[in-house]
Image (cartoon, rainbow, N blue to C red; front, top):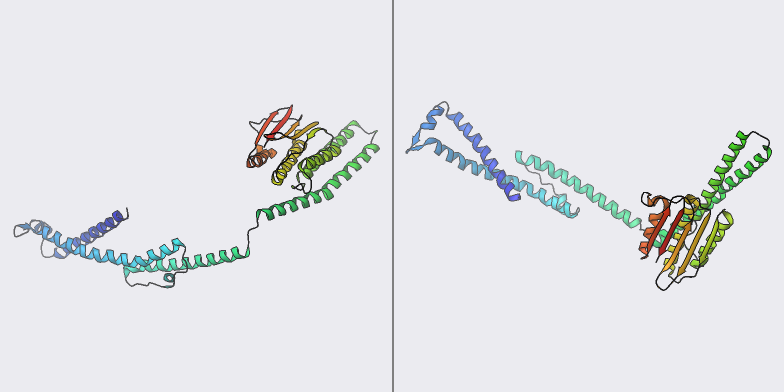
Length: 344
């Protein structure tokens, strides 16, 4: 393709020079002989215009060769600079050279040469800045990242508990006092107070679910069964929900335990925030082939075909289980409840 373009350029140069030379020759001979006589004039029985065309072609080829190789030579340095730019060698000595040429042909090449030198200088500065930034900003390891995230989750949970949870509790206490003072008031006022009480109760439930979700991910010194039992006991003491559980000891690595504990946290948080369930069942046991985790609620359920899994955090759970080589089965019926069965 490049060779075709090169020959096309040569042809166009020759054609342009021939046309120009022919026009100048005819104009110069116009005062001596008419144009029609040139077409009929013969030299040794050969039409004169054939001699004229041959001479013009020869001269045009010579001039075109000078022009072509002049352009090629003037662009050689530009091509070399572009090559070193592409390979990323911005410190090459060629960029410190200024290949200034004289003549009409070289003017445009000189402009390009200066622009390429400027671009190389900017790329060199950018490369040095990136090297400095890389040397001073060491990427954190996955373990450090997990530690930072866990500390931040714990901090947010503590601040929510110390501020928002306490304020919601205080608001509920004040509302109870107001209800005592307004026993004999109108039904409209009582309905408004009941609506406020319901809203605060829902906010408290949401806050408890968030605090459960923001608990430290790692079990620490506890086993998986101990950690899950602790979550369920705390949930039973703080939430108005009936809990049925059968939590057995399982023998897995610490990494799998941490992942399963985190999954249990997310599932319980989903039940509290979205299911509006009155009964919750949690089963954890191990057989010869798999570890089973089963969570059942009698809440509002959802349509598994239309629901975006990310809205319930289920996509994250599926990714965790897939990373452990397990499977997740979700069965949900509207207004009847949801069953999530996990096997690893």
